[in-house]
Amino acid sequence: MLQLSKQQQQQQQQQQQQQQQQQQQQQQQQQQQQQQQQQQQQQQQQQQQQQQQQQQQQQQQQQQQQQQQQQQQQQQQQQQQQQQQQQQQQQQQQQQQQQQQQQQQQQQQQQQQQQQQQQQQQQQQRILPDFVSQIDLFITGTVKPVDKDWGPLGTWENAQAGNLCFRLDAQVNTQSIKRRISDGSSGSFKL
Image (tube, rainbow, N blue to C red; front, side):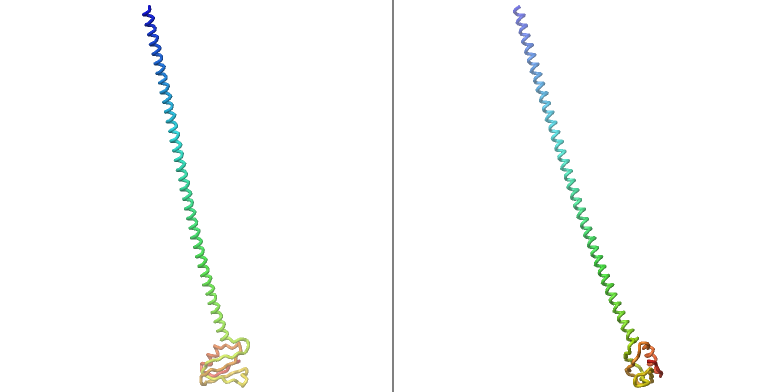
């Protein structure tokens, strides 16, 4: 009986030990599980950190893209400014050309005015004004007035050439007088 009870005690002790071992194993397993959980948490944290880093990288890329876009916009603005400057230069050139054209036109107008003035002067020389004036004609004859006071009629005849002074009014055509006198013929004309 004593042996039986000892054996039972031993068995109980063994069972207790086994139970303790099992408990220890369970504790170890729990610890392992906890460690695994911790590892998983660490991995999750690492993944989160990686995600955060990726997000940061994406943000940096976006910032870089924005900077590039800003640079492109600045370049476009510079190009636009250059184009505007070129347009302004072209406009200035056009304005200068227009000014030159206007100056040329003014010069042409001045030349035309000068020509007109010259023509008017020539016409004034050919056609006498309303008042009585004196002109010189180079002819191949002499003019003999009808009377000393240069009356209403004048005559000429073949004579030596010379500068002769005529007193004519505006209605006399000096060209026809020159032609008739240089002709060498005799005749008369009305003053």
